[in-house]
Length: 158
Image (tube, rainbow, N blue to C red; front, side, top):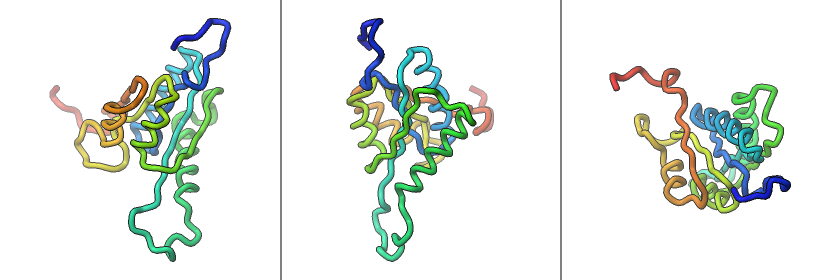
């Protein structure tokens, strides 16, 4: 992050966190807050949404995936920080597939922080499809945070 000490960080230096409500994304929010605080950088929590691939128009009446995504993001921030979110935290709810949208956002970010696994996918994978795609294609450094393994998985002999 190349900035003059007298200039504040720009939006291009912000720490972006992908949030899906999973334990790993809550851990990512907390870790990103520590990094943002240490770097005195702004932080942005991002949730994405899409319509389900096959959806009857009758089922759509009165339901908004964007509203659900906004609620999920707000609840995730409460879960991560209770009533004391970071002071320079902004929130974004963006339409589009998670990986592609976060990769797009990474073009104007100092760092992208993600949980290792979200709600989708297969149990037992070390990385989810979104974190794998972002690690491979993001335009900024990517940090992948694991949820506290002691809280979510049985102990191994490793």
